[in-house]
Amino acid sequence: MTKWYIIIFLFFFNSAKSSDFKLVCEETNVSYEKDFIKSFTKIVNFEQRTIINYSGNFFDRVVLFNRKEIVLYNNIFEISSTYNIRTKIWTSYKGLFIKFYKCDQKKRRF
Image (tube, rainbow, N blue to C red; front, side, top):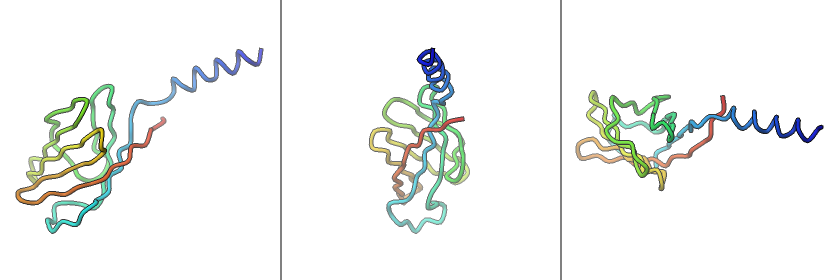
């Protein structure tokens, strides 16, 4: 009987997990462009292909979201950003300036 309780518990516990990831990114190089920030956080769902601004490095539209990378654009500061899903490197471009961020993916639970 206890075996069934454990199986049912594991089934419900597993279904309570979210498919969202908290993406925490921190700078790897120093840039003299003042529009770049030192760190930021995003909420990414790879199954539904959505990304949500959580803090910093905001964007206005998602240009591309596929299995290898995410491309974003910010109209206000004219910054384009790419996130390489395999290497977990976020790269931001503004004019002649380039900023690299190393990101960690953390599984979210609600």
